[in-house]
Image (tube, rainbow, N blue to C red):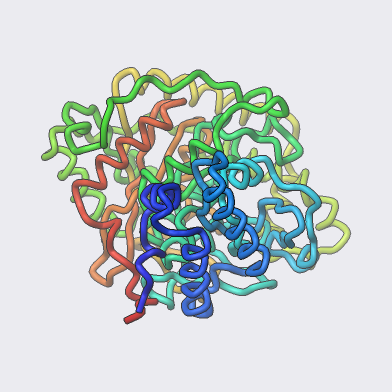
Length: 476
């Protein structure tokens, strides 16, 4: 029988731990047992340090007994994304050549999470170098969807999303360039926030000027994601763009559907006709748009300016891939999977003028988005254009009769928002007739991350989607 501790929310669990109504050792034992039972089915956690976690949990309990100060994540177990550097624990990036790499130091967001009292369990699976929104690689294989083991868990934070859905951990870190927090959240019925660039400092890569990739939080609810976000966010001297104005004052008290009354919402089911979307996905997001209107929001069929976003995103992504791996690919053409190799070669063909013009396009989009959010509070759209697809596929090649040319085409619903520098999240919105999760993408004004999480929490009160546990890995 499933121990209910593994599906207790992070906010509640942290409160129980601080009140000493449950011990960190008990919490860890419950999650380790769940991993032992279910992880062989989904392959979400790919590295596990049980001995180290047990020692950390015992120390966490000692601190509470001794009356020592503890952090907001005290005693909460977490496995980190396998692209995040974790000191003394292997970090493979999902690639054979780094399968035995053990970093000497933690990435900043990892260190902040540990400093806040979380218990490090292990690492969660990723695609090769986190490139793509389907989690499989040659080191650990494929991560399967907890709601249907024949389907994809999404990516690139697919291991993290599946681990949350399965009750392996109450919070998870991830990263997002083109949807890597939002897509797997949609596929696994959890919440994933891509923060405004600068909210979570970019101190872990080699280029603080690269605007597309950010680290962010995941949780089974918006409140749990907000708890982790409060720890990950904050300025750092190593990232000159991380100093950000504080979020506007939020209403006091628990978020409720009352927060949605009078909200001005732009509903973009196909992003202004720019992307094909599966009918069963549209059915879910259209129903939730109606629910928001019934809750008192003003919902218009409208989309902000995304013209040029596709080219800007693809140009900057390809340029970054070529800078990171172009020399390696030239030295060994078989080193990367075929679609990542294609993307690297696309970058090699670019000129400095191409990159500069992409940055100019991004500048225009950011400025136009600022004007748009003078008129609207929120944009809603599908978090993914498709429902979870067969895990044996590399990526979808067709949507509603539209043929897709590259591995990026089916990911456009989240990545077209990336160059605009806006916070965006996926929140559970419903299920297809086959019981597969569908997420609603919510996009807010630059810097409105805290408000966006509150609105997502209010939206959760309109339905019980977040509480539906995965049937693919159910335990009596």
